[in-house]
Image 1: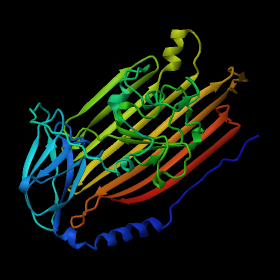
Image 2: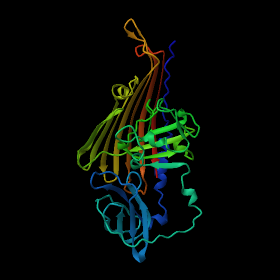
Image 3: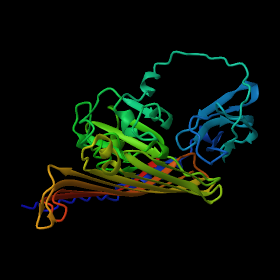
Image 4: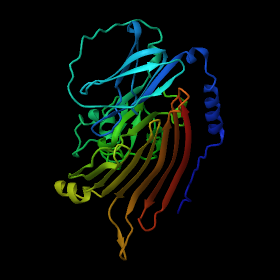
Length: 410
């Protein structure tokens, strides 16, 4: 008996547009205090490949040793606001990079966008004085249940492949349980797999974990950072009860062509990246194909009827000094045979489970020239299809899809 396909489409109403313009108009009401101060903001990148550099310390030292500063986020974006008018020395510092130095003359109400790149190299640091003050608001600033994962963390966990995979690191976290080496399910804090919200570059991914538990749709060589919320996440991630896994991918190399190819008993991988327009537009492509049936099954001398693959592509463009645009797409495929192979009159009637993921999305960030805000526009489409039964005539099938549009202002 065949079940009718199920499709779900979630289309946002015009409320997000109303909210966006409401916040935009409210920011136009500049307070007198802000009119007497200035704002310095911009993006920090690595001079070798154009990648954003999160964590760079940007400071302004002015008259009477006045000091103002901020740290760059995952986009390499920093913002130092409410700076009194005057002449300042700007410093951008990061371990393993040469210090960037510039001089700025700020006037009241001025908003300056200053983008700069850091060159790698050792630099001798001066005396460092660490001071601590007790602040009651300090504990409130900590995001409960949040852990940020970097590619360097993933590489510390042994995997059957040449490169690391996000899911192997997730399995080491407390409160995370898997169904073993087969199944593609992740249980976090006792919740069901469907109660986990998994996103990549703002796109929902319904079934991100492959049938073989060592692999997900997120190889470490495409990841910039991953935020894992085991609890305490806000309304931005509404719709799930157990956890949130928010993956941010890195941009392609904007300076030179680079790539890698690897072959292992479980999976073969390929990655290619480089500039389409040097220092302005880059691309990143990553693809993986399982070779378990051809490789690992021969090592243990028994059939392993599993197959999966995934492909990811990203295009990133620096539109202007104040704006950036990225387009991302991902596709995954999983197939696993259940039970014994059944052939009847030359037709394969073997039961198998198959699922496909597709997601497309775009992200546009811009800094209005006359407003001290960071604006972000997101749009994406996600879809999943599942079948069970013989490949030519499945007995059950289901599908779901979702459209998402969001506008964020900071």
